[in-house]
Image 1 (cartoon, protein in one colour):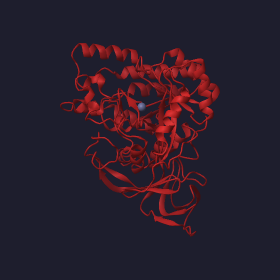
Image 2 (spheres, rainbow, N blue to C red):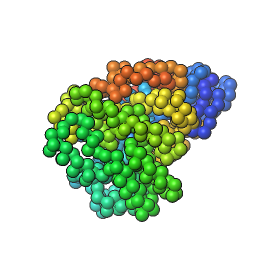
Image 3 (cartoon, protein in one colour):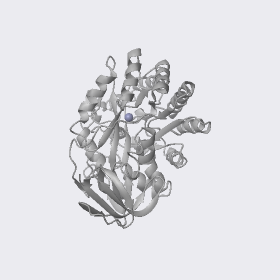
Image 4 (cartoon, rainbow, N blue to C red):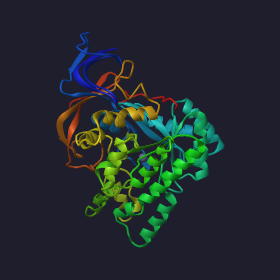
Length: 458
Ligand SMILES: [Zn+2]
């Protein structure tokens, strides 16, 4: 067991802001104070920098099969990139394919992560087929620490569940304490619009966005919340992108319902305009839900500031332009859905949120770490700086700038949606369970050092 002393930093949690020292013994935070003098194996001077709880990204897709290819980052490259960006915990998605048990899916994804992940990880379970047996398996998984399930209202024939199955799954979480995460888009409407566009010869990337109306997200968000209300359980809407959907969450919360939602940096910093980039460039931004009109960004920032949105995750699901996105060069519906983001979340949100005054420094920590930890059963082990919590911390330099680009970032993908954008506020040192895993520009961690996190219930 080794010890680490972080001195003279400005410690920031969701509620606190003060100058102090943090003493780490083994993999946990042991003591917080001022002018701590205990001897340590290593001492880091954090003067002029913030000491933040490690980032928690509860929406990633590493090594995920999609349309005959796999997302470009596996659990090693993806978690190394996450670490460089100041994220020390991810919750990824295991997928139950039709005809398979949930247990089989969980084992498959555990194997993908084992020996590779450099930071701690948990799993949500995607359910694509619900039977009596699957319902019983939900209970078993919750006991094993997989306490959240993702359901789809989109992608008919692949992932989409009907309302009856969704309602049954919601009711089950009322008994087993799990949480339902919902991909809320009206898949039936979208399917019709996609077929119609293709029949009219509209094949360019921008038609991905034009066939997924904001109202399709608003409608599904409303329906998801109504189903959860009738089941008497909480619900969490993933990757909320549209003002129409935010209105539904806000209205539900105003009525006192336990409706939660996350948004992602791409919806805060990019917009529909990106699909109008020349040639096939728009494919870089093909993701679901799609990027929305630029005006939506202000609405989302307001939702984050006023707690109608409780988390910022990435939906990191990278596909290279070469050979992967290219599969849809003659048909937008064949472009793999997803974009890279696991490494850029903290700096983008700090730069575009805190520095501009849209959210406070404490709210930044809450949205990127504390609140996702609480919603998904990781708090107080993760998501704060406190004695007894895991020593997952980021020493963050608020004054240093960097230019984002595919060449310098660590994600294994041949483009970056924010190419050339300069951000101020950069990760300096990253500590995962007491060990320094990123030291300046250098990765000093180890593949396989990350552990599976058994998460608790509500
Ligand atoms: Zn996703």
